[in-house]
Image 1 (cartoon, rainbow, N blue to C red):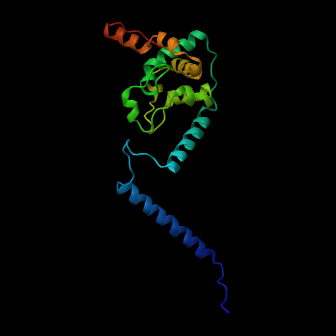
Image 2: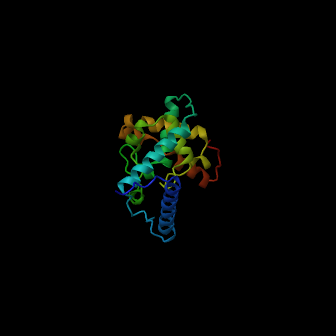
Image 3: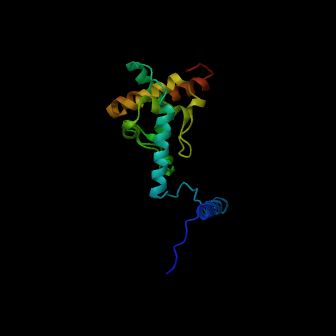
Length: 191
């Protein structure tokens, strides 16, 4: 009768190290061999997409955990809507307003914020607007806009589900007004 092989801790370690080395070699072949598809026209597989969404959600939740939203007046929310038109509508659309044509070519495609922001807190929306989301096309507006403005945009985003197309259409585009002032030689600080 054959004797059972004794478990060897050293052989288990050697096997684990060999597996790690094999995974490193495979990852290097994919990365340095140009095998990972980076074209925006390439769709991620379900597992990769799910992993990226989970990573994003947990990162935003953790990063925004220490933020406390200020109080907002109806005027603050309206001003946030005016800035939303200039900052966000091109990619995300708005009530009764479609995103610009180029947004269809973004991968991942920018979400409809009236739906996507439903589970987010105002602080999480603010954090995303301020810091952006890497590898999604969502810019870091914290480099160009003041926190006060971004909080108002976040407050508006949280109200998007209640905004009618007519009310949205009536909002001025704050950024068009600022650009017109700058072109006319009137420099003013909008923050």
